[in-house]
Image (cartoon, rainbow, N blue to C red; front, top):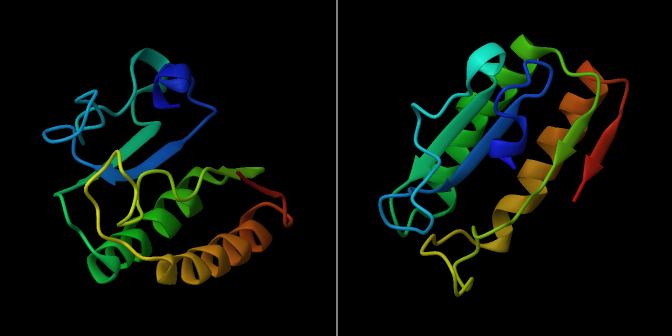
Length: 122
């Protein structure tokens, strides 16, 4: 997703994922923050393998709302749950379904605060 919008300053991508040091295709490092006019429009938060609910949610809460408030989006489009779950065969994170009610509430509140409630959750 990030590569599609990496040069577009009007789209902010935020990704919380397993680090490319351990997971194919080896991308999504913090320094990968966009190119050209889109520099600064991508925020990557890579995690070490087996990151569980508490540190994942701590990172989410500390970073995602602040980035969204600074960016001031007109709509939120989120792709939630990809490779995060501890049973996902492609990744090595250790989150449970217990994180999603918290994440859903946060995005719901942010969508109403910033985007007149416009939120598309994929």
